[in-house]
Length: 223
Image (cartoon, rainbow, N blue to C red; front, side, top):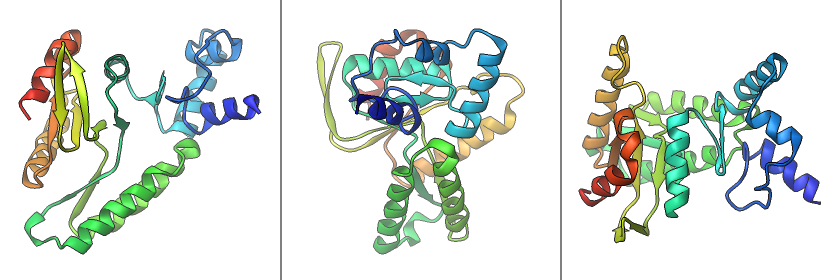
């Protein structure tokens, strides 16, 4: 039974699930996957990341993420006991004042269905693309911010912070890089949509990763 549970955690959760019992890294298979050494291992690992997990190359306890910086954010959240969801789907309305309550309900419902589809074999990506195309015709932008923090009480830097509403966290990994003007335009457009839709969100940048334990609590306080 444990063998099937282990396979489920690896293939369907994309790595070590938050509530699984396989925290030991003594397995030679897991070691070779976590740290590919030979050229063949790297080729298979990259193919596995592209085909099965939609480019999520980095393993964490909660599954796979896309970059080392996101891995650091996940490690910080896990250390501090922060509850979060990675790449939860979110619908943003280009004309939020004209959106009806029934439309908002159904968009949230379809986003929920997409998020429970297994991420392996690019199934979730396929469903996400279909829903994104459908919602685009209705002037709704479907996106996946990096992290979502649900309502909770958090203890950071000996201070208790109560989140009375869900908070979205966007990590702009290429914000300060040269030659990424289009990325910055997308970033600004997305931030305007967050603002017009009254979304509660936090921006994180690469320069803040070295002191995330100091920066993140301060950002939460400003919400």
